[in-house]
Amino acid sequence: MSPTLKERAVGPIEAAMIAAASERRKRLYGLSPKPVVRHLPQPQPQPQAPLALLQWVPPQYPSAKRLATAKGRKLIMEVAAKHRLNWRELVGPVRSRGVVTARHEAAFRLVVELGFSYPKAGRMLGNRDHSTIIASCRRYAQMAPDVAEAWQAHVDCETADRVHKRERAIRLYVEDGLTPGQISVRVHSSPTAVSKWISELSKDETWLSPLSPNCTDSGDVLGH
Image (tube, helix red, strand yellow):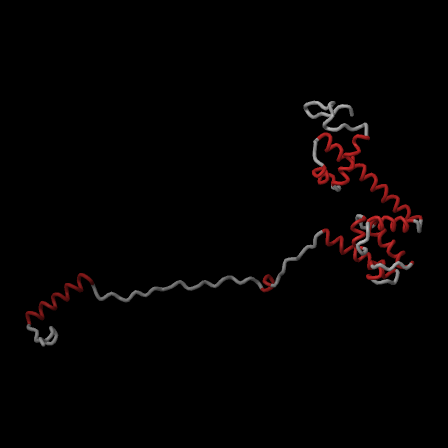
């Protein structure tokens, strides 16, 4: 085998040439490059929220319907405690005199004091019919004069509200030509009641149907 460059003897001329080449290499390229060290970005600490804020839970506000139902249950429990009864006896099928009297009082207070409708009061008192609640209120109103006055005021208010809703429903039907479903949303009444009011238009001489020949092309109603 032939000896390598390092193994064979190097003369003075070759040594000078090697040294000159080394100098040129250093002058052109500099020293041997240093290894590149990449500094990765360190993760920044995230701001921590206070412990009280982490443990805070947003309040849950109950709806108006749930609040009304809670008030109704509280009233029924008050009436039951007043008559020394429990909840099941008051809303159950028991028809003894004491239980029936307490049930009449609960129905009356639900309707007059809390403003519950007759169907809703019936649902609160064991899913009873609205006609049963009306009869209970009338019977309880006969027990004392002040109770009778409160019941009469409630009935008068209901009558005035019903008349106002009927007049507004008829005006929406005659003047605006709305359907019973649209009118029921406007006057906050059932479509059945609105349809009944509209069917009574033929018996009422003070109102005209939109299809009447006396109506002008612009939609004005004549003959009021």
